[in-house]
Image (tube, rainbow, N blue to C red):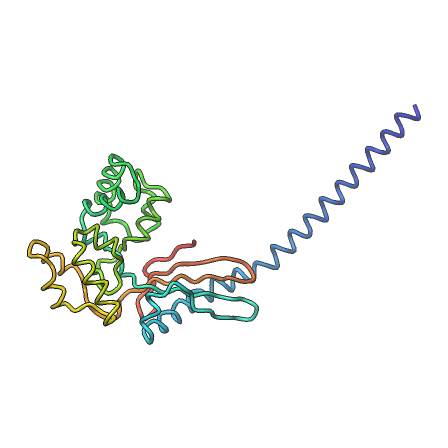
Length: 252
């Protein structure tokens, strides 16, 4: 009998010990969540203001648009990094057809049948799409496909800026190596591409492509990634105009 009582007492001690540990752990985690909530709220409010600040920097120093580093900014104990690029370095889905979209998907490793189906589904529904996140409702789209779109395309009906476009994009739309080298060398030597010079360089069968590009030194639309680096990691990406109007936003 005494053995049963001893076992029961030991079991109760173990149970109460576990209960106390769980309650203490829960209290600590709750305090951590409560402590980080104000930081999260601050990030949401401050991110848009910092996005506008990033555009201000880019307008006054366009080299930032080609930089791989983020401009640092501190608010109290919060450290931010602000990355700014030209939204028009991407192709407009609304100005380029499904053939270009399908070709880029193939280049990114998508299977041929799936790429063709996704391109068709996208352009059947494109008129009703307002934000990039809505692409996930299109049959065949997943987060990988959405990432490809966000990296290489824009939903805005805008010409692509030749001064910021990548070599990969120029190749996808059909420019030759010689024509791509002219763009690259012009940027390296002068910081911009001359419309007349490029038109003379491009072969006659591709001259129509030139008019799908704009040659202005500054873009109309900007993509700004605001990263809170400390005390915890979080980021938002904005597609904006220079006056701060937001056309799209998502979390990364």
